[in-house]
Image 1 (tube, helix red, strand yellow):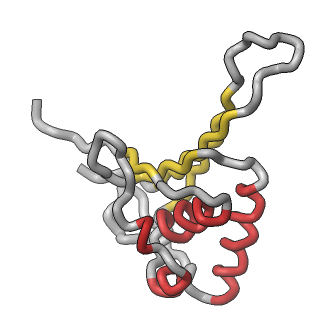
Image 2 (tube, rainbow, N blue to C red):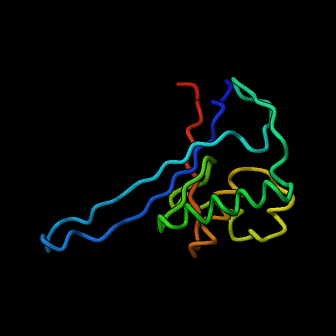
Length: 134
């Protein structure tokens, strides 16, 4: 089965309760960011040809994107990947560094990991649905 042509990075942020209702449950805002597979593996239903996100120009654009997303002040970042429960933590995130940005074009690294680091998160969570028989 082919996946959709879009990868999804989900960003969650909790906001404080409204001041006029001291017992109200805090409102939660959710931002969903849909992007094409930056590394373009060619395995999607619809594939596009794109230039490399590893170029200095594209890296600057991604940095500007993440800077803007960071203004949302996310408290959780979820990316499209299978991660083991019960915490669903993406195991590669603790090894994330600037060198990964220069060698791994995957949107998980380029946007998800970069954003999580920018806002000081210790964990990135994976969410993905994999079809199984039955």
